Image 1 (cartoon, each protein chain N blue to C red):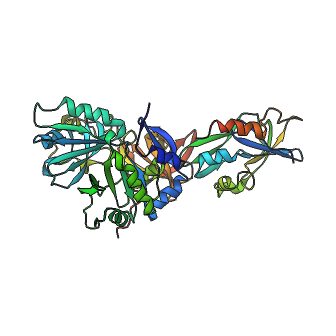
Image 2: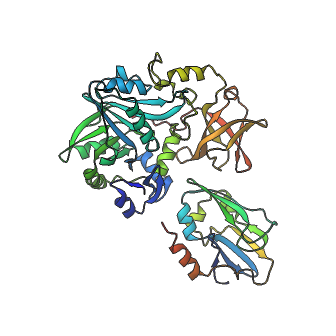
Image 3: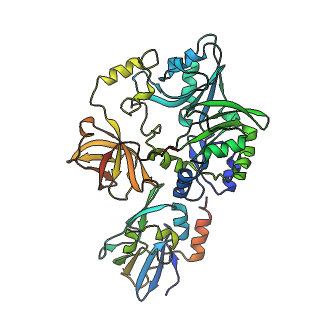
Length: 359
Length: 126
């Protein structure tokens, strides 16, 4: 029994190829992953991301409760701000990567679908006796990402509001078809765009508005190629319980001084080990695609492992992210990736592979 | 030209002058979409029916291509090395994969007819 988003029937009607994703029936693609990818890069595309976990925290202790669990500077956030952060385990490994929303009188947390129950349990088990009320609204709401250079203009037209002055990584509530919804200038594609959380019963009305503005649906397949080109980590690939955010290159999401959050001692202990592998981008010379788990070699020595790989439609090359032994990351020598028994040449390249030109 | 027949693994076979042309079915390329790369077998190698002889890489996944019949590879469609997407655009024509000189007189007797193959994929469509 898999969860279905309120847009499930729509995805089926659009011939979306449905796959099980963290217990949810989600569209991997409608037509071509490459065409959906390029639509987002050049124009606009919409994603059903209702599988993401959406948790609200109310009450006078909500901020303190979040600050104990999440690594980003929760205490210094102002109303309307959104920040990327990590939830660590006791050893300093990563339990999840999340977005924290300061919504003025309360807070919201968006977590990965695969980690929703884990993070919910963590929030509950460490709940203070009074002062925090938790609501998991994942199953009562839908979340749609509208991404691409035309996203802000089209979202503004749908909302009849001007989002062009809205700050990146900010959120606000607005009234949409008579209900209060949460919108933010966030995304996971490397493009400008928004993410809208709407009550379950408004999801298909939003879909109609997207259609009226000729915004095509895009599947999770191109969401992956887009985030990979943009150098963004995906939990279960570049992040997991055995990888800490520093080695994954996410130190910017750890507050300074690093103190007072769950797992901070474990993280400090891990950081004494300077031989931890670090996340890097690899550009393959050939067209074959490296996949998660493929080993990386240099001069016959195994020096790393691929965490994600794909063909980057905007880069026009086979690319990968990998965890590499730190003593090799500065090396100018080409590396080799064992792709199903055959070695493919690759070079270390700075992330991201793709960066949009801000207009 | 003999009638087109299919392997359950979605390769098609068509005979001409004792040589069999092999390609991928429309269903297979529709399922793959976004073909990036095809690794073809070497000319001159002997293959057995059901042996993995090539691989096709799409954005989503990599899949093996199997020799539908036993014989020797006599030619490969080298154009695919520069533009693998031809397979998606024209799987029964310009997008053929390789040719096999079969080692027996009735090399395709174990393969599926068009009708049988269509019945098989009817149950697999998403």
